[in-house]
Image 1 (spheres, rainbow, N blue to C red):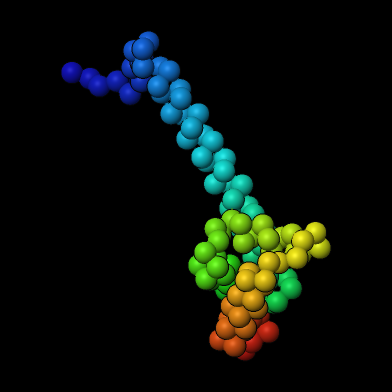
Image 2 (image 1 turned 120 degrees about the vertical axis):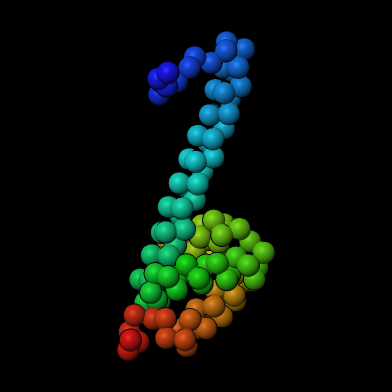
Length: 115
């Protein structure tokens, strides 16, 4: 007996469910890609402005997100808005960002620090 790798046709009544699930998954993946790009751009801002290592830039965003109970993607959007001089950072985010940056710079996570 040989096994075929070809997909078997779906029952007609199940196609709508499968298509709906695939459309939902596709939308989720698109949101994840957009969110990832925003976070990467915000890390780039921190790297350029504060001369942090990229890994430290991510940690700073993560810490701000956790300390302010704000989604990581939202913190990243705020940092981008600030960098483009469109928006001011809300005081809790601004304060926690400064504190997190200082912690990482003090720990030697900057690019100017000797290795």
